[in-house]
Length: 163
Image 1 (cartoon, rainbow, N blue to C red):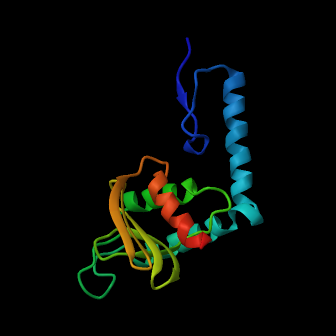
Image 2 (image 1 turned 90 degrees about the vertical axis):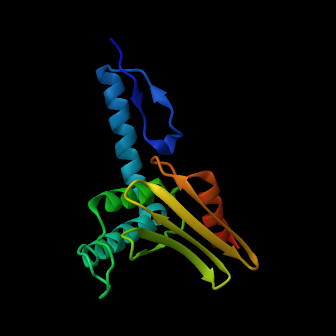
């Protein structure tokens, strides 16, 4: 009997249909190799620092009213979605700054200037609400997050970083 297994999303969602010990070994090696790349100074340092910042934001905003007003607490589901978002960033991608919103969402932001910015907010359900400003041009929308950053959102972030 063979079982279908989904490989991590950073490989484009391809599948393997192996359930043998060799297939298990290959999946384990791929996961370990990916972890080593993520932990490298040149490719993963930004994501590691962003993950640390996320833990800090989550700790500071874990109870209702964290802003001194009526802000919603950051839920564990939102933190999990945010961690998956960070881990889905391509290797070498400039890591975003991280903040919390009063509705309990977590925000990722790539900023170059007041007129060159992308903001992505993630909800506990995994909705990505994004807004971008490039000079006088603006774009915004909502995309679902299923472990892989939607290409439109990734293009916007890369555009801010590249220009």
